[in-house]
Length: 298
Image 1 (cartoon, rainbow, N blue to C red):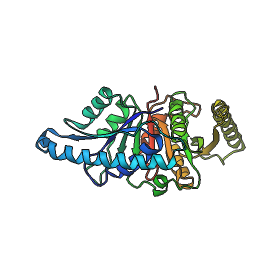
Image 2 (cartoon, one colour):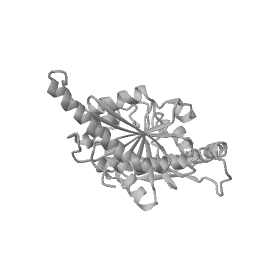
Image 3 (cartoon, rainbow, N blue to C red):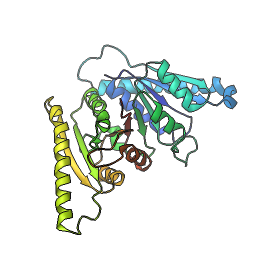
Image 4 (tube, helix red, strand yellow):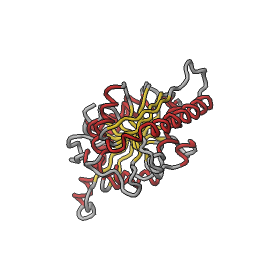
């Protein structure tokens, strides 16, 4: 079970979109939460003011998370959810990673946008460094997060895990299962594979080759799903055709999910796809669904 997560806030209106979602996750999963803000060395004189703000936000989160926990929990909880606010001075990526290592953090939650407002987290920027260097999963929250996810009113509760066919891409599955179990609500795990078949309508041979690939990937997904089903968990598998990143995003548009969980690394799989690059493309394209990123070697 996850016990402690850190939520990154930079003081901007966009970055704090993550705050309401963090309340819901903390309450539903009964997980202690650390709110972290990093000041640059040039802003060191503002630390007292920012620390007071973070402590205020921690108090709000704790109260709301307890309210949510009481609403959904069927059994009495033996301890209150804890929340604290922290301010450190330094360079964001380095301080965030240091905080994770020194404070027994198990999850990192951050917005997909930062204090710049319009500009997203650039690949090669703070978020990219955290995603690829963190020893724990990183939970990205889009600034256009569906209200239905926070209010738990989606038509179906599903957690989607795209797989490439490699063992590295499967690293997200144990974390997805832990989240499903800890949330305590009936939900469905959806394992999907998307591959680009190119122009498959040119020849009968191409059609037959596509059918073989689809059958092979369906068998692979069903093989991954089998031991999960033995634990009495609902699992569905889908094989999709098209550019992997675009197909994943289009699937989410048509089938809104509570969470998309992906590995950040993964060697070439059954479909000859470099999975890490697909994940990075999805990071930039996802707009309304939270994204849990797990190191492919975890």
